Each structure stands twice: as C-alpha cells, then as structure tokens.
Length: 247
Image (cartoon, rainbow, N blue to C red; front, top):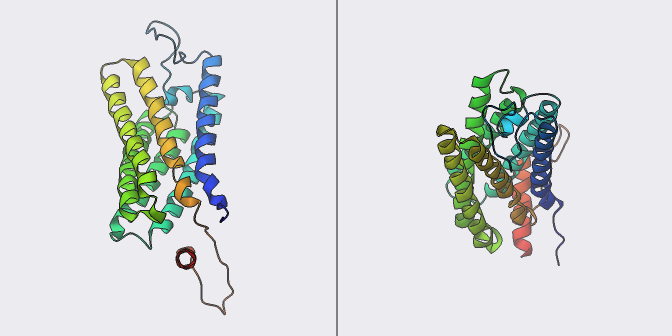
C-alpha cells in the first residue's frame, strides 16, 4: 500500500486548531463576563452582549487571541487554496473555475485578517466589510469546489468527496441566510448560534481536502542560475504525471 502523503494532515490540523482557537476566545469572553453564553438567554437590559464571534473577540485579552487566530487561519487557509489550485490545474477543463475559486478564497482570507485586526469597537465599517468578504466569498468558494470535485473526479473519488461538500455547502449557505435573517429581526442569541454553526461548517468543508491531498505531494525546487527555473506548479504537474503512470 502507498503511504499517505503528509499534506493530508494540513487541512485537518488547520480546521481543528482554528476551531479550537475560536472557542478559546469564546470561553475567555464568557469568563470575563463580556458575552452571554450560547446556552443562555440574552437580556437586552443586562451588561453582557450577545455571543457573536466578533463581540467575543472585541476586548482584551480575548481580542489578542482572536487576532492571532484569524491571522494564522487566513495564512494557512490561503496556502490550502493555492495547493488546491495546483492540484486541479492539470485536470480542470475550464481554468476560470479553478482561478475564480482561488481568487474567492484569497479574498475571503483577506477578509479574515480585516475581521481579526480591526475589532468591532475600533472600526465597525471595516470589520463588517471583512465579515461580508469572509462569509460571502467563502460560501462561493464552497459551492465552486463542490462542483469541481464532481466534474474532475480525482482518483475516482468525486462522489466520495463531492457529496459531503455539497451537503456542507448547503449547511453553510443555510446558516448564513439564517444568520442575516435573525439579525434583521434582532433575535441575537439565535443569530449568534447560526454564526457559530456557519463557521464550524465552513472549517469542516476545508478539512475535506484531506481526501484528495493524501494522494499528492507538493515540492518547491530551488536551482542555480545555470539551470532553467522550475516553478511549483510545473513541479506539481510532473509529480501528477508520475503518479498517474504508477497507477
């Protein structure tokens, strides 16, 4: 049996650590009595705020952890997006789908840095722009990748990976629509729960890339000036062709 690629663990570790970091922010905020716990009822007249993720990471010390978590998540999320792009590049017949997917995730990751570095109390407008970019473009990325998964069918695992991704994309979209609808009705506790569910489903979606990553390896080749330069994408294409010949 062929050994599993170490890149398999990158999406899983990313999702687990990001989720754990956000829950640490939540528990710090609850301990400091900044927000109402998710399993409680919100009282508008009380001193505590609704348990939205942004509010949980709005004040120190939780805001310090929140910024670090969001910045690291944005960086690793972008790396996963680039690796996924390179993985699909030799296989996708419509390059604009693959490129558009990478652009969507890249902008969503940039939105994550805005959310993490510009707290709600410091710059609400910029913070909300980052939130819209993260949720909106992140959801678009999920749907595009779900479609690509079935079309490309890497290693005949299109259905195995595609069906869970379609289900997770539907869950992300439903939670996002529910979140905005509940926000408009000022049902803050239910909206906050929908927001937390949305983020967890999105992280779950990204972790599914471990299914395809386990078959591939990614290398960066460095050469001197006498040899022709070899890019990461070219190296990946050669590796893919090599692996295909071995099947």
